[in-house]
Amino acid sequence: NAGVTQTPKFQVLKTGQSMTLQCAQDMNHNSMYWYRQDPGMGLRLIYYSASEGTTDKGEVPNGYNVSRLNKREFSLRLESAAPSQTSVYFCASSEVGASDPQHFGDGTRLSIL
Amino acid sequence: AQTVTQSQPEMSVQEAETVTLSCTYDTSESDYYLFWYKQPPSRQMILVIRQEAYKQQNATENRFSVNFQKAAKSFSLKISDSQLGDAAMYFCASIHNAGNNRKLIWGLGTSLAVNP
Image (tube, rainbow over all chains, first blue to last red; front, side, top):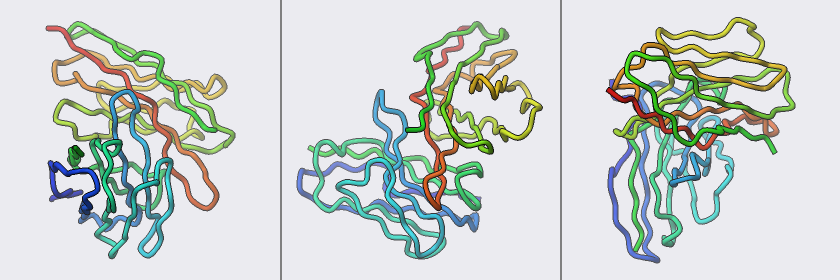
């Protein structure tokens, strides 16, 4: 019973490099979310997908792109990493929408030098 | 803008005692949901409790209960018989209606230490 799986768990990048964070859920949830968590800033929503085939911007979308590949998978891409994107990234899913409890992955700690 | 405020950045409690974490929120909706999530040092976010605004009865989950004051827009979390495993960051969140989609707005968290 995996729930929400994020890969990788840790990553170090150089400024300007690109990478994709992967997220998959096995709970047949419709909605998926990407957050970043920074000290003193709490959780901030980057992008979300209310259903397969749809994506919408959250509070802090600049510098990121997302793909809802299918119902299970929701990836987050950094096209040209910047030190300001050093953070812990969480993927979450919920059954229908944000009124439902969100289930979180274990997070990805990303450092950009 | 919709906001969620947790006014206590840090709290501590003695093991076996009771502690209350504060949360206030601002919403223009009449029907909404409120949540408390726990984030232990392992970093995984775990749902503690959920409250539907249309329900007058306060939600309870074992040792965790809320004091939901709708008129005051207050949603505090009470932890009874505190255990060492309760040490964590606690986040309050409220639903936010943004057009056709709804999303959670999060507080900044309260760090709870449990002293043996």
